[in-house]
Image (cartoon, rainbow, N blue to C red; front, side, top):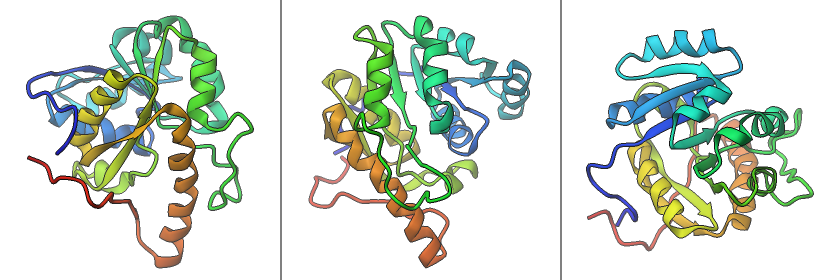
Length: 223
């Protein structure tokens, strides 16, 4: 069963880094599912141009104003700009859910696990944003190739967070873009999914596939 799915609830979702590979794919699928999507970028013009390409009710702003316009904010930015982006939007996301999809990849060895000393990118985000923000970690292990073509990814999405209700909101959103969302527990557990991204990058290279993913077996099937 896909936990947390409440039919009919439509969200306003800001995707910071929304013009990138993962962000643009998420935007397409969430628009198709009937959500309102706000594309965020360091360049408001770039965000607005991409929002026009997406069509529908998509909007485009700079990162701060995109975060301000939404009730759920997704961080889909490189780890190198993760801290800077968080600092930039902190005032705009208080009282909201922030979904952190950042992975601590360290070029050039991106297929080698190199977690930060703080434990995970998600834990860094929670520390920087403070207790007024409910950080949820998800979408690390989802290949962007199918998403960019407007197709749901054939994999499960692990979702982590210290607040159960916020996890369930994101689990429902994961079901719009992939096979299903799966509750992975508290935010500290995000380190496992963040590390797994480097493993999957290596698998993609060795087996010459575009988007290896994961499946959690033994769970009840969707009802």
